[in-house]
Image 1 (cartoon, rainbow, N blue to C red):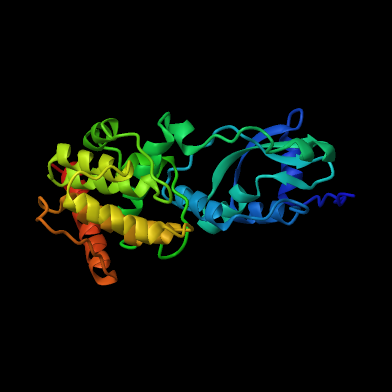
Image 2 (spheres, rainbow, N blue to C red; image 1 turned 90 degrees about the horizontal axis):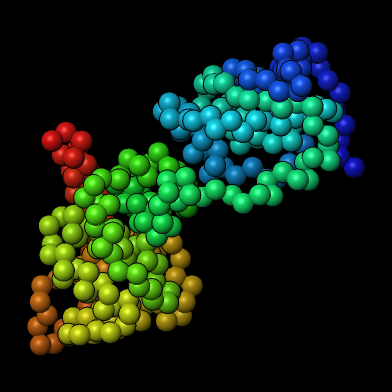
Length: 293
């Protein structure tokens, strides 16, 4: 049985009750108010820290947008949903307006969060592939080592911050190819960066297509194809490897000059780190010049 909570007349919930019309209202809420509601958060799903951190950053940076979705509270006083938004508000230390719906039955909790979730690509009206590439570019711009601190949530406002006309045009020409155990987001991002930094687009896209479709046409492509096969043949290649090793490997492969008669492809940890640092610096220089021509 779900817990039954008694109302405390002097907490923020009593304010919500007083001003609500048919259980609905919109109020500004500060961290202390949010904490009082979070004390009523029982039986909810596990809090996802990545979501809280992302929401808090959006709130601190004045990028938080109220989409009208109310924080829902049962007639018993239990918080039914909104724990991530309230926790983020506490972490951000700001005051913001929220909608509240406070007259729901306990049984309504079972029907919440069962609808189709709107992804970042839905919100931006972009393909999942393009959003994935832009996420990698954002992380590369913001952090030298993309996944040094584990998986990180990237939202619409961050995606928009790295959407330039030039990058969008490049994405429109990217081939739709896939190779087992190779994450396209990283191979595509490496190709976008090569073209962005002045390497011949036709060569980059051709080399990308040939290795992802496993149809090498010269010694370099044969050697790189062999390298990719060797490092992915056992499967289970995680995000950190894709970001910190596969991305710089594809970048090196794309920019290498025309192959010699005998070609061997190698990439050690030191070289991969150097490439990632260089890409981080080049990207920041690119966006500085783009934003301040």
